[in-house]
Image (cartoon, rainbow over all chains, first blue to last red; front, side):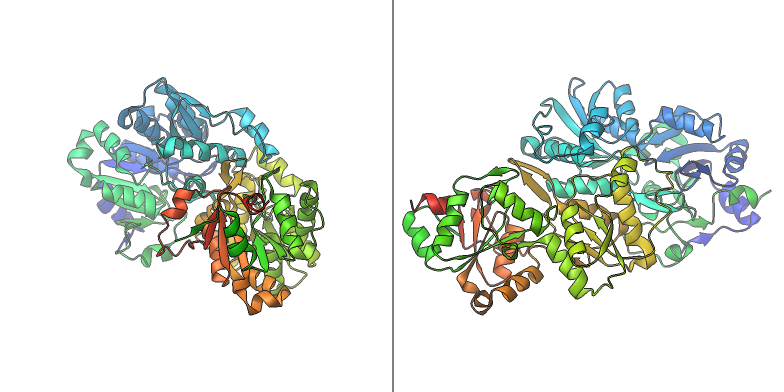
Length: 313
Length: 313
């Protein structure tokens, strides 16, 4: 059973006293699209003043860590460092480099946006697909008899798929060709599995649903899912924060999704707090089945992140 | 165990003598995209001369029956009648009309092409979405903060999803909004579930994979799948051919897919013949597990449909 945080005493006793490391999901927790949620800035400042360590963990692969820094600034949240941001695009690029050990002369086919492209480029890889403007142009009036699917790059050594708003049939079918190539031996990397993408109170198509299309069409499942709840991202965070690695219970993972954020925190040994500004409702939390392995019952839940500040000031 | 048809005697004894009704899948059997397969025209003429009844059953919903007639002509196969064609777009429109009994003043949201639009219009319905050019225009540079998702048509009474080459994130997200509307009460109709779409020897994204995207994103499964292997289309064919209804074993379903065509024929009580010009290989057929409920072991298989003519002439 999760504890609802709704009093000043609860914030001070249960949140501020118990934790040194605060891991935050971004979309649905700090902001919805381009709309900063109430008292988020004040909450982050309050935690920083209390000498807490803050880390942002996002499954949104459309932005690289560098682009995220700009978004934080634009949102009026200054003084964030690149090392405080862990994104699924970054995690996927690290996976290609450190786990797959893909040679740098191999190309990576990207179904996704510039977040993935930038992170891979920072690690020395050449990407194809992705935001290539010709794929948008040729995809608009797609003809199934096109010759555009004939010239595949034989040097592709990995396929990385994530969220893209510039989706079209050509990009999906090209991705499928690489997934079917060489007896399906090219590694298939998913940035994350979120089925929906919440924007301004609406649920749009999430990376997981896009990835599901090419998975279903090619009869393959991703060889790796790099975003939350996968623990490779958690391990990278712990490598940076030895104190959290030694004592995960001093860490609190705050997010808006049971099947990614809460599971990510719980599997990493951290306590968890669900905010209701994203896709979950109080009803969902109260009716959770603890036997359901796809979700994790959060330690706490709270109406919105900003309540941490509002309840104490 | 399936019998491979490779001699003149087999064609005459096993095919010509035993069957009066020949049901054909189109893509992958008659043609691949715009490329007519060898000796197909001659095979159809040969069967017609032998007084066989011919029916075309296609899961490709991008074309209406009227448009299919034009395609047959363009391919050099004349004298086909609209009543000889059963398409998944037609079957879906009939489902909306006869099974759902959707009032004619209700609108139907279409994720798909003009095949679905035309068949629904022939039955008196107004469609939205589909090939609406504004959705292609607005979808090219999709901004997740768009207001395009705000003005939903409150008069939508059904959602019909099928194959579309003009796919984009906007159309998928709009479809998702209707699937989530009114506590997910708007019926969700899938034209067909083929995961892939074979064109010119390549496998592209099939309707089933596109439908899977919105199904996964909205946590819904289609309320009805109208194309093969669903038997509503078979029942409509039998209603037109009482002789087949009385004695289904006088019918042979010819197709290139185990999980749609072969299953469709077998479930309808017909014998089945797989052609290897589509997505299946001889290896697949020989290694079939008869326990697998997703596929049906064909009665026969043959390298290509045209062999029926070539082996006998």
